[in-house]
Image (cartoon, rainbow, N blue to C red; front, side):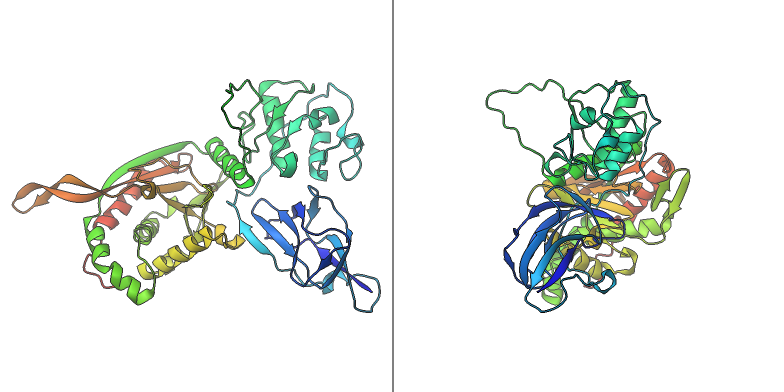
Length: 454
């Protein structure tokens, strides 16, 4: 009987470990080729890991909640083939395909670990065994233990933290956020209950940690635990506010020509391309043109450096049936005409709603657009999608009386009007750049050619 190792697959360039969420099979169970054996989670995707062979699950090497490095064996499957009772060498193992369910891609982390503080309690975390167990019933990854040891955080103190990982596991972001909070508030290392909200790139003089306070609840109130995606969204939004000083500018745009063109051509577009034409690709086309004119809006910040992005990758915020949010990305959006953008928008939106996006579909964005008009809102103040420096919101299109300038004088007419808002990072985008860029996008929309062919 041959044994084949089931390997923790690589889920992306920046992913070095994953958490085991649930074993779908038990030791002794039969498994078919490509049948799901377990579910794992990373910061970017939740995935089902299929069996690479047909056989019997003979060993499970890690428990649910354990964090396992990419490339490490997590289980062994016994097959009916007659061969040596050993797994194939690592270099001969083929990468296992996974069924992926993306979640919002968070910013790449730059850990901040404040200076060490003297410990006031005993029971150092360094006494924990390799897998983070022993006197504690909780699992701690080696990285969390190393950080705790460096900061002289006692085991009892670490046990008091309620983490954001699977089954309340304390993650790297959780412990760094807790350390920031302890430093800024001058807290002692004595054991006390703390509910940790993970934070990334959070400055040491501020904190996204929420200490457990007295929350008033009535008998009819319902407590709902955040799902994993909502936790990541919350983390990302708080981190963005801590990272970037937000400024929002607004303009009102006359989009009558766009509305009339779409009304006249939507049936033809559907017949010709098999796709619906919405306002989103038209707005994205104007956004891309504006970025060409103002490339410093398409940047990221790395310490004291400004990274000017040469590719224009437009993220489009999409609401999921669950109520959560995801931002698929149109790569190299400047290479598409409006028809091509419409195809990309519809494809990404359809796959997002069906939970069929791939990890690469939600990575690499350089600028984000969100359509708050979809919900009937006339304007919004969106939060920047880090590490980008700007995000645009398009409001609902509404008929309004507006003043038109004509050769015979000003007149009042009913026009289709829409608010655009731009939130930008005031560290690198000042009012002149942000306002000028927003106005340029509005100008492109107002100059839309209503006679163009589909």
